[in-house]
Length: 587
Image (cartoon, rainbow, N blue to C red):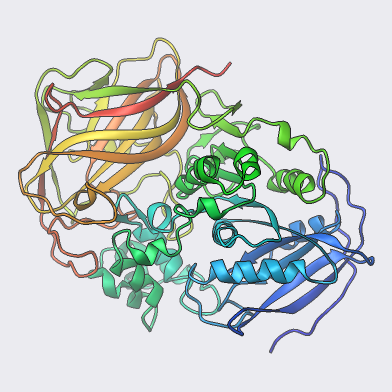
């Protein structure tokens, strides 16, 4: 049964350091928003109680427009003169239609924006806000060029569901896809995860046992008594094909004609979307205003601002209150207020290591020196006890290192860029437990005598061979502290069959040496005196990513793993190296 339309007066305390609230408000529940195909979506509308026309803010969610924890911001916006529309997306909670994550959000978002602009309480100017799924829906709607949209604020948001959500480097984000796509999302409402994590749950239900099951194409049945079609679609479309391009924004920035303020974290799984959203709009945004006014903030966080993440406390300046920044942004673009945000440099990033916020004029940072650091060893780089080194010197010593990758004994996930699915450790976490393993090649630099700052995209050029038709290569950039704490800074993976492009698959010739370019996303960090740069090379990171079984079979059907013999080359002819974006040390 749907709730009847309800109006009430709401008064909320004002957050600190923002303009004070002045409005009493009314809330109308379950207002019908018709879509072009006749489906009815339902929204709650928070707006000033007095008669008038107000700028509109829209947030569209699959998690429930009436869930605990979201009302504060909605009330606080409305008390400052906005009409706020909080809507359940298609197929979720009160809204009608089929739930198929992300696939209806472009048209539904457009229709919602234009509906809101025409309401009696609207002045015709519309903005959109929200994070994660709620950020992606903004990109998709904006790429449809709704004429009433003025500005968007996508937080920790994907711009390509293939490249920076369900896959990275062609490897499947297993923990996220199962924990979010199956366990929590098969039907109208979100499922709890307790039966996969509770100590009293049967062993066969627990994540640590479920993740080993094969084949992946029927993995959904382990948590649901019926197939979860969107999960099966994600597995079936393991390359960047038409299925993914239809909902990608990365080819459509020219259609986004409004400024975007992107906001993300260095350890968020969607940091690629945050950065691509900024650079895509700066280069290809559909209007001069959109290109000029788009902004980016990236902090030392995961999937939302915090002071401490993983094993590291980044200090009191690290955290941010998103409502304050949202209000500053929308007050300028929708209210016409002089908030000063338009005069700020477009990029604001947090440098880890020195724990400082710094503004820049663009991204990558102007003047960046992309500097190769070369791997080398005496042929025994296995584990942190080995003889692997990394430096700006051209490689010498032994020409290669080798290890065996056994999919039945993969390197476990220890921190990194993850969130939102199964409870897997994320963020900066001490890497020493995995660096003890023989199947992790560890290359460590000499102690830094001077600080070295990096800010920008990180890439690995790896020369390697395997004895089968396919495998993975996983790279970590690490800061080794004087006390031995090994802090992961950036990471990336490449499924070898995608070495020539993520839109096509080409199996390997066993034993042949290939050069792989591995995207390690981006970071901003200062290696301080007394610290050491380290690069880890291995072939697995489970269960954040699925295990490559080394057979060359399709993702969903492979069931029988084989052990792969891996060789990493670092000679003058095959100089494996990591490319670091070196910048001036922040003052």
